[in-house]
Amino acid sequence: MTFVVTENCIKCKYMDCVEVCPVDCFYAGENMLVIHPDECIDCGVCEPECPALAIFADTDENASADWLELNAKYSKVWPNILLKGQPPDDAEKWDGAADKTAAFSPNPHQD
Image (cartoon, rainbow, N blue to C red; front, side, top):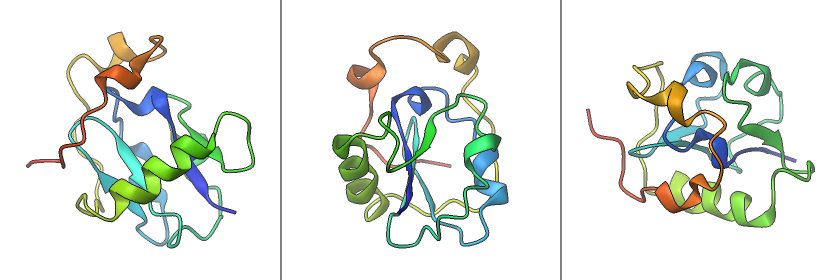
């Protein structure tokens, strides 16, 4: 089992989850984070830390195979993130918004 970052992280990217991860398995895209499924040790400490409620166990119905695949794919090409950064200025506006998948960016995080 692994944990999966899902749609509500898109354009929120709060990053509270990053600092509690004991194995540094988060990777950063331009407007969301993903979890590397082979690095995640299934400890679950990230799930309650996510203000956007975007992290689920891969066995949860909210963590579809599509989200697991997206996490696996982009964790191989995006940079590893170890420290919490600043969320987007409009993160609160996007938190809970419907149909955010269209806003997903495949671009990596840029400092």
